[in-house]
Amino acid sequence: MSDPIVATNLDTPLMIAARNGNVDALSELIDFGVPVDAVDKDNRTAFIHAAIRGEFDTAKRLLKAGADINARDNEGRTAVHYTVLGRSSGRSRRFLQQLLVKNGANLSVCDASGFTPLMLCAKSGYFKLISHGRPDLAEILIKSGVDVNFRNAAGLTALLVGAADGNKVVIMLLRMASSMMEKRALNQVAAEAFASAVRDPDAKPPPQRIKL
Image (cartoon, rainbow, N blue to C red; front, side, top):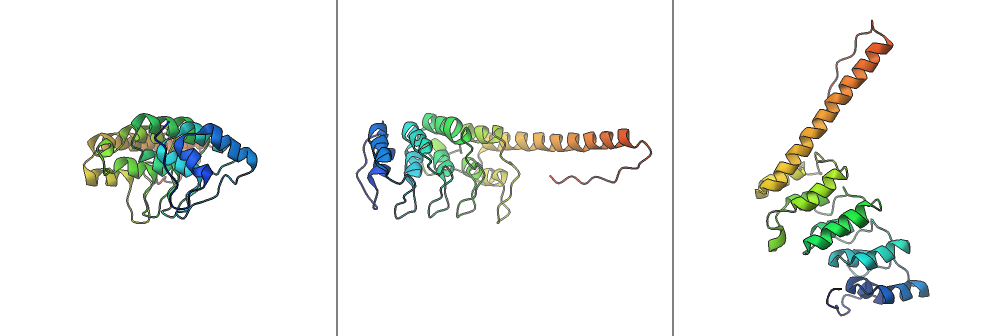
């Protein structure tokens, strides 16, 4: 359990319990009928507060009570964004893989600055843990099926973000994943052409254009 945090910014008792990892207090409040998706002045729910601190057990209890796993705050960030920015690598990996991915969180949503969680993994941070990006969490996101070639409104991909900050390990992961996607696309085209030829051997297949 993390060190307790006092109430600030109109935090509710549910948010404080979620952030402090106090499952018993959280459960009592939920059983009493406290709304699980109430927000503070930053539009953050108790679930987002739990994600910021990496509090797995309180977050799990909130989901069981029907909390919105994809709730967004005033910065457009969800629990997934805050998890990849977490200061504890072990907590972040567990929270992302065993809670967010497992329960179907949207892993590709952009925040208000246009960054997806994968882009944040590729980006250098403001403290030592993520000074060279988060390749460990990027790998989880990639294996979970996020589109590594996704471009935001500014035309940026996670690879471009990582390259701008010189994060070599993340860049390598993204390049490998992109290459695999291209190979799968080519294999799909070949399979469709073969199936078409089997159905109608005399037909001339139209030229295929692959969007990479």
